[in-house]
Every structure is written in C-alpha cells, then in structure tokens.
Image (tube, rainbow over all chains, first blue to last red; front, side, top):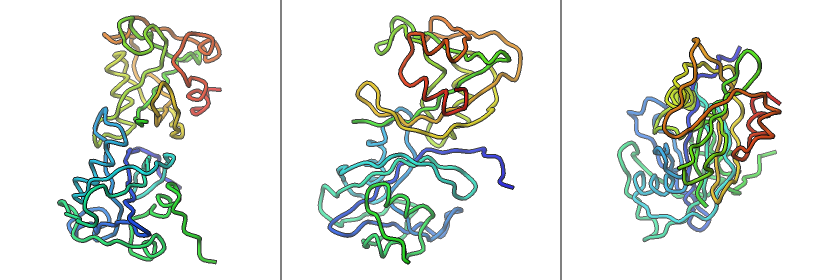
Length: 142
Length: 132
C-alpha cells in the first residue's frame, strides 16, 4: 500500500539547449539522494521569487551560465525518492559564451548530449517527463 | 509573464462551510475581495508545511490536512500561478482572528461563495479538493 503523502516540494527544472544538445550535470558522490546521477539544471524557488527568476538563477549558480527562457512547459506533479514534486519546467538557451560551464558545489561533471542520448545515461527520475513538458519529445522505443 | 507558486488552504467546518477572508481595503491588488487562506512557500518548505503555517499566521487556527488536490496552473491578472490546494480542518476549537492583511472573515457554503465578490479561480479550487 502506498504510504500517505506527507511532503510535496516545488522546484524548477531548466533544460539548457544549444543546437541539438542539452546540458546535464552529474550529482556528486556525497549527495544522499541519487549520487552520481545525471540531471538538468534546477532547484527550489525562494519565497516570492518567480519560477522564471529561479530557473535562470539556478543555471547561473549550478552551471555558471547566463540563460534566456525559450519557453516554459506546464507544471506537473511526480513522485520520486519518497516525496512528491511539483515541477515547473523551462527550455533555456545560453545567453553568454557557449559551453563555458562552471560547476557549483554539488556537481562533479557536465555533458552536452542529445535528448535521445540523455535518456540512456544514468539519470534522475523524471527526465523524460521534463523533456516532454518543454517539447523535446523522445519517441519511446518500440 | 511571471509564474508564482502558492498554496491555498480551504478550511472547512462541520457544516461544510469554507473559511473566506476579506482582503483589506488598503491592498494594492484585489482590495475588498474575498479569498481563501493562501500564501507563498518558503525555500525548501513543503507545501504541507506551508499551508498549515499560512493558516496559523493569517487566522490563528491550528489545522490538519484532510485532502490534497492536484496542483494546477492558472493565469490571473498578468501573472501565472501554480496552485497547490488543500482541504483543511481545525484541530482545536478557536475563533478566527484575522491579521493586518484582512478586514473580515466568513464561513460560507461553496455555492454561496461563488456568488460573492471573490478573487478568481474559486470554482477550480473547490473542484480540485472535491468540495464541488
């Protein structure tokens, strides 16, 4: 039986795309949740902060990138790691010098990869939903 | 367009009446309109913690969650809102005490509320938590 839902957290996710490739960051080994898994830029909103400000701030803090928002996807809810998440996803474009990723604490590596290839990596749960939500649909293998 | 995330707490009493608060006349936006308890979530705070906190801060009531409704997005007044709605009930007997942001309160049936001068989206809120 599914345990009662006790914790729902709101986050933003940013798929930073340049050409045909998106940016994924590798979580550090020390992370209690999903160590060494690949994930897009993302994070919590500050109180009173818009989702737009939060996602561009996260891209700056986590990857050292200035970005602009190409489009947003509809917010969706999903379960992962014993909590529920309300995810507001965005498609971002690097605004500054491309591919000059500067990782913050918490990530040990980065990669630019096509959406198809990204799903073959050891990613956090929900990446396919993130891609779908911003229109980067990857056909499910037959 | 900016998108904000808020929680909405629909506090219901034994008569199936919902608590609504009247925004004070000095508010820049939607002054004098009726609204449920709502508020912004703190960084890293769960929506569950946010809604019980907001109700306590805005009304003095201690409450628990009866049911959570699915999150949904609405556009209102030039901004976009991600709303996580909850159906709530009091955990101890107490009268409502509104604070500075609100002038008045009322307990009313959902059908009655829909005829009042409310902020937008009340029907969607009620439907999301199964009150309508």
